[in-house]
Image 1 (tube, rainbow, N blue to C red):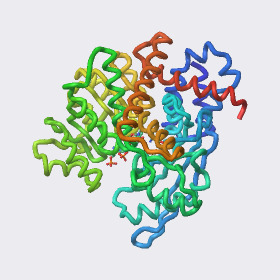
Image 2: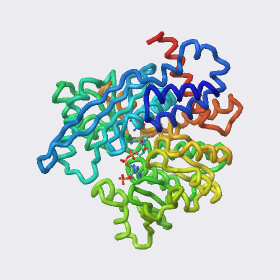
Image 3: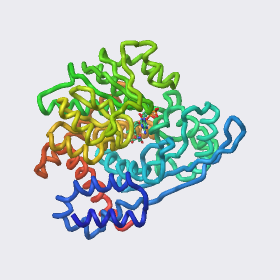
Image 4: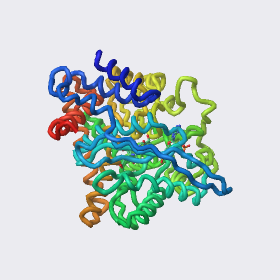
Length: 450
Ligand code: NDP
Ligand code: 2IT
C-alpha cells in the first residue's frame, strides 16, 4: 500500500535511524488498511500523520557520580506520544540499548495498548541508556535522582504518569518518587508500581505476567482447550517472566524454561520458582547459578545459540511466552515452534516477535496474542493504582486480580470480535490494532486539530 510506504519514507527523513519505530508503525498501518480504505474521515483529519508524530519529546542529560568519584553521563528520554484518551501513561526503561527509536516504538505501541484496556490513559514511554548491571545501590539512587532532577517538571498525576519497564522496578520507582517529592513537595500518584508500603497497588508487580497468562487462557478457551498439563516455554527472567511462570503453575501448566542476556535455562522437571525468585529478585545473580541448586537442569549459553535465532524457542512445547525484549523471536524460531507443535503464543514483552515471525504464526493459524493485547495487564493495573491513589482507597488482592481478569477478557473479546468483523477471526494483530486505533482516532477527531 502506498500510504504505508509513504509514511515510512517520511519518517525515515524526519526521524532518521529509528528501525524499531518504523517496524512498529508498519505493523499497525498494515492492519489498518481495511478501515482506512473505507473511512474517509481518518484521512480528512490527517489522523495517521498526527498519530506517528509524538505530541512532545523530551531528551536530556543525566549526569551522576559513580562510586569511584568519576562523573558519568547518560541520555534520558520521555516521549509524550498521545493524550487523546487520558494522561500520558507508560514505563521507563533503563538499558544500555535505549535510544530514541526504541523509546518511540514502545511509546507508539503503548497508545494502542492503553486504548485496548478501555481505561482513560494516553500513551507515553521513557528511559535512559543507563546500564543498571553491576551498579551499587548508591549509584542506582544517584542516577535516579539525577534523572528526576530534569523529568520532575514534565510529569504529574493528571499529566504524565511513568512506571517501570526493563531495568526499572520498585527500588528505582522509590528513588525517583523520593526525589520528585523533595523537588515538588507533592505526595501524589505520579508514579505507578510503587511499594506497597506507600501507595502501591496489590497485584501491580504480578499483573503483566498474570495478565499474559489469562490472555492465553482466553485464547485457548475459545478453542475448547485449557492450560492444564501444557508444557510451556518462557523467555526472560525478570518481572514479567517470573509472574508468568507463577500463574502458569497456578493454572496447572508446566513452564520448563526461562532466559536472561547470558543464556537459556531448561529444566524439564519444571522451573523452580523459589530458586528463580531468590536469584533474580533478591540476589540479582546470573541465571547459570540456578544449576547449583538444580544440577539436573541445563544452561545453554548465548554462544551456543543457533545463528538464526534463540535456543529457547527450539525446545519442544505446546505454549510459548516471550517475556524478555523486542525481536527476540525470529522467523526461524517461529518455524521451529510451529514444527514442534506449539498451539499458542502469548507475548509478555513488547514486540518480541519479528514481523516475519508474526506472519509464520498467522499463516499456521495458531493462537497468537500480540504484546499490545497480551501484556496490557501491567498498564491496566497501573491505572487501577492511579484510581486507588486518587480516591485514597486501597483494594484487596482479590479485588484487583478480579478486575485484571475482567480487563484481560475484555481486551481478548475486543480484539477477537474486531478481527471477526473484518473477516479474519484468527488474526488478533488486526483485531487489536483496529480496536485500539478506532478509540484513539475517534477521540482525536472529537477534540479537534491539536
Ligand atoms: P526486567 O528488567 O525485570 O527483566 C528483563 C528480562 O529480559 C531480564 O531477564 C533480562 O536479562 C532480559 N533481557 C532484557 N533485554 C535483553 C536483551 N537485549 N537480550 C536478552 N535478554 C534480555 O524487565 P520486565 O520483565 O519488566 O520487561 C520484560 C519485557 O516486558 C519488556 O519487553 C518490557 O517492555 C515488557 N513489559 C513490561 C511490563 C512491566 O509491567 N514491567 C508491562 C508490559 C510489557 P538480563 O537481566 O540479563 O539483562
Ligand atoms: O510496556 C508497558 O506496558 C509497561 N512497561 C507498563 C507501563 C505502565 O505504565 O504500567
